[in-house]
Length: 151
Image (tube, rainbow, N blue to C red):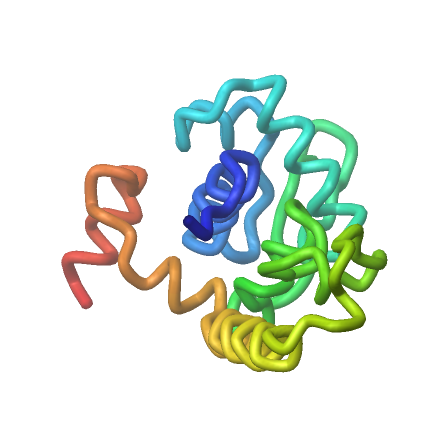
């Protein structure tokens, strides 16, 4: 089974929340509460996303976290790589060097590379804006619900 980590899943949820607030900052506690992510986990994810250049943080009374660039310019592949590391289905195509004993003789390696590239390409084509465009109304703040209903 191919599965993203829970941190990555939470990170996407947190980023879609922030995408709906583009141009505004939110504190770690606000983000955690709005998304249901435990506060300590949210803090860990936010730090990783800042390190990756996906989020920007600002200290102070009006500070918090916000997208470092428009949601249309952040891909799901970037998010996955920031939180889960390189996209690699098997050890032999992981850039860190595989630990497979038959890697040099494996006839499937080239095909795994093709599959991996197709998945990475698909994740590069989906943006945070695409993900945020389908946020259920229950997860929007009251003012955002009115704006979404008007669309």
